[in-house]
Length: 148
Image (spheres, rainbow, N blue to C red):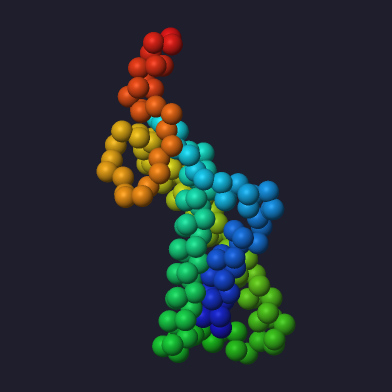
């Protein structure tokens, strides 16, 4: 039963970002991310959250399958009727999902705080990578100083 709970939690976490997405958010996700020199793009936090939810969701699924393969399970609920098992499963899945989302939010904010602002003068860039920048970072800083 524990393996099934972990697998169900992982599946929900894998699908949660796409299930709650509105149609206008799809268009935002399809738009290219254009970096702004000297700043961290505002969508970086959303990207970190999505990546971390997917990683933890896959981890739950993998642990659930591993427990099932090695036949490790907790049979505490074996003596209860099916309704009690169902309610316990739903409650535990909801608790695990909310706890995971809270943890992902914290981890993503820490990652965002460690993210350096974009500097187009830093490299090397990969071959074929397109970078749209109106001016180099150094030129932008000079332009800001001259403007003031």
